[in-house]
Length: 114
Length: 111
Image (tube, rainbow over all chains, first blue to last red; front, side, top):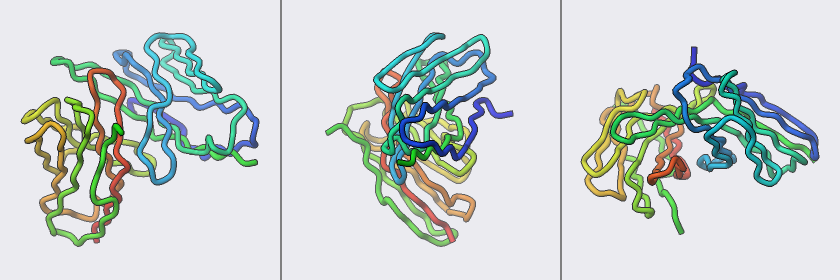
């Protein structure tokens, strides 16, 4: 079983729809939870970063963490064609010496059509 | 502009021919990593470095080498590439926070 599970999609939605992207994880030692967005032929870029259970909002994006269920979500409101990308969840694991390792999900490909 | 650069962006080579992919960051970051990205498998860490002359294996280190002689540079070396190393490679750097900055990627094909 992978430490982080993410449905690869693809997910196709009309412009203006609410998008829900999800990841589950098995390691309760994960401390930080992130969402990266990756456009075609580009490197991933950090979109959202959260530490505790609950919601964090940034414009049209909301990140949700439920540590008791080991489940994280990213919601995109009023989706736009420019949101078409692959979204990767990532989780941080701390090691001695101050090193934090990121474990990534496989990524969900999202297409928002006009 | 803060950035991570990689070269080359695209490379086609043959089995057994040594190659190096360069990576450089201009943010004075201590932590640098190499990942490979394969369909359905996501990003998997190959090697990482916590500082100059300090490197360690990630999850898939076999067939790769790295070095960290200067803080800004972290080259990835494939001594004898094989077809199963055909992949999309990303270099990344991070400061003291968890915000990781990725390079633009190197698409490698080994024939």
